[in-house]
Image (cartoon, rainbow, N blue to C red; front, side):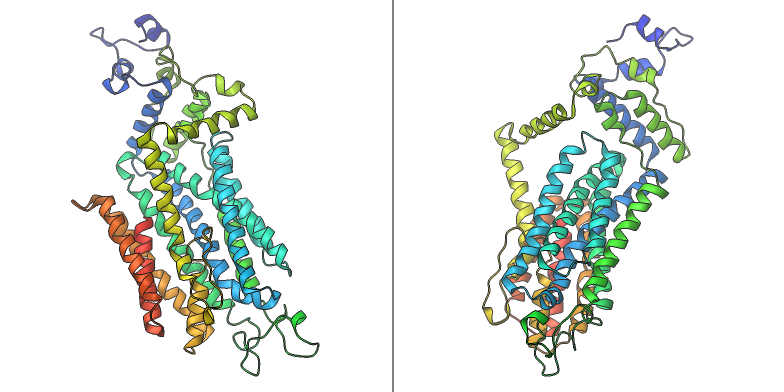
Length: 481
């Protein structure tokens, strides 16, 4: 506990009755008892941000992080939408199509892990912008290659940027939201179905219109093949007549670039005060808090004197000069060592494994539908395929069997996925419903999601395909929230 002289030296005055001012109240706060130095400072930061409520800065953060969620599903949906046209032009096999989704998913895994470590070393500010920049640069290039291997490489790098963006957006939103608005973290998922709808709408405008022949079919009604697979002079699917998938990917890359410009140019994201404290940069943390308060039209109550009054308490790793002296390699080792917390005791290990399994089965949801392929000559069940990437192909295949045009199928995608928006809102509302809450909400939504996939496998009419897919995506969006 800081003594009176030390607090007085820190610039604290005494009241007329000889009692300590507000600073003493902070020091003697019962909530501070038993906390490490970092935790005490973090508690003060939380209180400061809570006093702002949902200020202008918090709303900017919410929507810009939401756009990161939107980018995630833009590409998760895109590869399923462009795969048929891509395969037709480049001439790779149906089996080889799975490598595109595996490439994207490998990038997602690598991005989530690498950026998950880097975000606590280089800071939220750099990671917040760099992940979207990587996705936009490689996304803009994705429509250029005319060979299969080039597509795979660029797809992996897009996944690397997108995969790193989601955990960073979640962290930033959580750190800046006031405590009584934490439910908005669930609402953030609403940008995912928005991303799917935007991608499907753009695909509806480009892919069927700029496809080989008549919806990919030649004059004889058969599917056109890649030009190198047919004799010279025969109708085939070439680049010039199949630009739709490229226009879609170029547009998505441009959207990513716009999001990057919004984050980096029009809105200057302030580094997380908690990260700065963790790195021993208290003065910078105080400056950031004052900048945020000014942006919100308020005044910050946090000063260096407040932190100084706590400086003689027991220190803790991550709060002080020690992090500043460590090399990059040493910082990486420290961050990796923190993952041991996930398995620090049986309860924590069980919770970690259950959460991982939940996420895996969530992402497998759509890939189960991938077991249906025309003439049932191929079975796909790739465990690394991201949600939603196969379902567009399945629906396209089923619709071709009942003579529904490619353009109508792409229109149906928009109808199906727009219903994910109310699904997210319902899932977020479940948080505060007595006797239901998060647990029952997840159980019910996952059960109905699974039932809808079973029904989808047994029927094949246009109306039922649309209706059951609406049901599936509604409950999956509810579950994700």
